[in-house]
Image 1 (cartoon, rainbow, N blue to C red):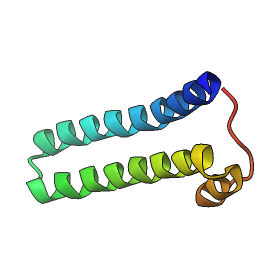
Image 2 (image 1 turned 180 degrees about the vertical axis):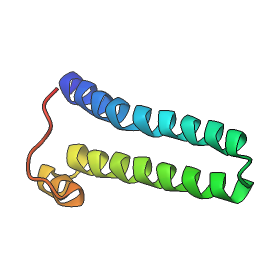
Image 3 (image 1 turned 90 degrees about the horizontal axis):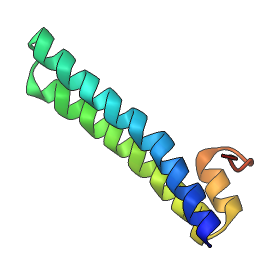
Image 4 (image 1 turned 180 degrees about the horizontal axis):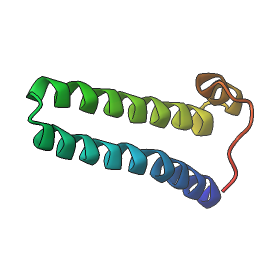
Length: 81
């Protein structure tokens, strides 16, 4: 079970970190370009939903079945780290 948790953690870090960095980049761009707060809210929601969907798919893969998780991610191959 420890290997599964490590694999799940690695998968989440590989996905969530780029979302977080992209969100920070958007926040900086919004400030520099003087964009409205609605733009920031839409971008943040998009990144959050993307990361949340990936988390859900990986949890389904680990706790329900690999096949169900693969269908959610449109991939039959489990990533190797």
